[in-house]
Image (cartoon, rainbow, N blue to C red; front, side):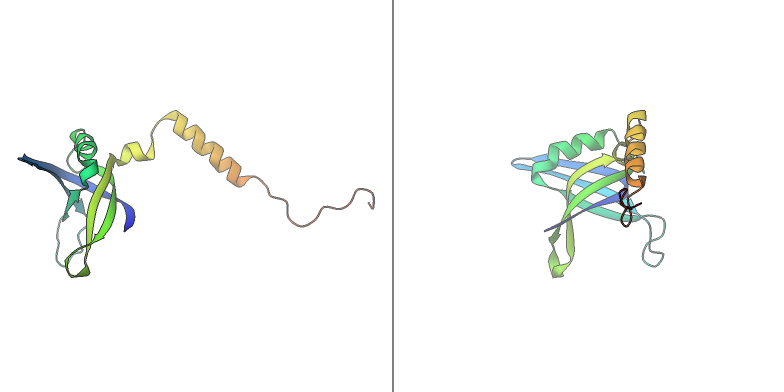
Amino acid sequence: MARTTMELAFISAERVKFDNVDLVKLYLGDEPDGEKDLGVSLLSMQVAEGSLDEVWAACKGLDVLETVCVTVEIDRGSKNAGKFIVLHVESAKAARGTGAADTASEARKLAAQQQAKPTGTQPDAAKA
């Protein structure tokens, strides 16, 4: 199965518990295509059995329409359509990081990428 991470708008989370059943379903919004959807394109996704409590706890602190990073596994659904199974959810703000330490580490990474790299060969000091 393939995995991907998407940024979507959080709309709601729903938990159903009865007998031996424990399910969590997420409702998320994406940009409308303008043909079939106007306003918000609604997506409904099941949460993986091993991630129920983690995802439920993460959703408790989210605001409606807050941008979230959703990690999903893409499973084969009916008629070979992709079926998204949620593995992890976090606020996009937390995923991007907002602290000074994050800014400093990003600056160090950028500086390391921009260091001059030697090109060609250097003249031999003995021959010069």
